[in-house]
Length: 241
Image (tube, rainbow, N blue to C red; front, side, top):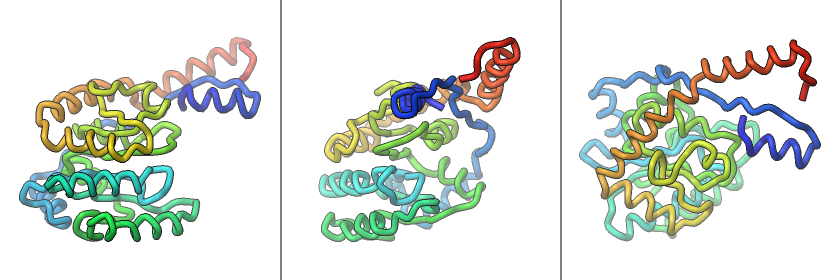
């Protein structure tokens, strides 16, 4: 799904591959009513203007959850009133130890579980779409990703994004134009990026516009067209990768 994975297959498994990026359906999460948005924000104590960072994927090492917690703590110490709402959490791997250790850090960081960091768990389709539209920004400080569908889903909902400066994200994101990309696992840099989103409305609008412009390039229709082209080449006699 990315040049990064093409390189991994080549270097670690001695296999060649074609790249077909993942796609999204930009109509999957239609905007909910204002009443729904207000109700969702009210559930996490943000109905009256508190800035909401959305995290998608639960609390796990790959998502860089600890870095999001530490960055949020820096913002709170500066007097910035923000909350981190975390959706998701089910995984085929057991991240209980990491999750417990990450949550145990909250008190010493000056954060309160359920107030500053709210775990929403696995949610249904409609509620996930509601959060994409109700939040103010996506915080996605991953340490490793194959592609990062949540980034494009958030952008399709008009949500500005702060992600990590991972090679896979640099394949389709431009720092300062379509997202903010602080260095991986750099809590201070992540906090600076998150602070910029809170205080700079023009930056949020620029990233929102840049993200929306990017979305049409990564539709499932575009993915299907690329697959068809590869299949046609194979039928015409090109050796299979």
